Length: 139
Image (cartoon, rainbow, N blue to C red; front, side, top):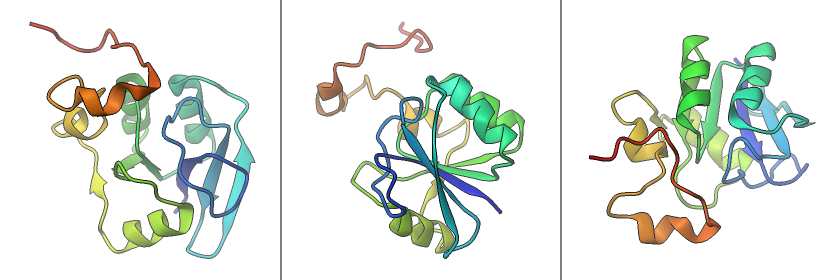
C-alpha cells in the first residue's frame, strides 16, 4: 500500500500542506517506517492527482482537495482520507490512518470535509484569500 500526503517541506516528518494542488513536496509512505519525499513539479490539483495515479498511490491523506482532483482520484480507486483542520505531521497522519482515526472522504461527506466551507464556517477559513470556486451550487 502506498499512502501519499502533501507536505510543506522536504522533511520526512513535515507538516501536511494545507493546499493539495500547490504542495511543493509529497511524502509517499509504503509502511510506517519507509517514507520517501518527492518534490512535486506539477501545480494544480488535476495534474498532481494524475501524478499520484501514475505512482500507483492507494491512499491520499489531505486537509484540502478540490472536487475535480477528488473525482479523478476516486475514478482510479484511490481512497481519500481527511487529515483534519489542525496541524498534523507525516508520522501522526500515518499513525491516525492505521488506527482508523481518519474519516474517509465520500461523495456524501466531501462538501462537509473538503469543500470550500462557504457556509456557516466561512469566516474561519478564508484567511488565505481564496475565491469561491465554480463547482458550488448557489441557490
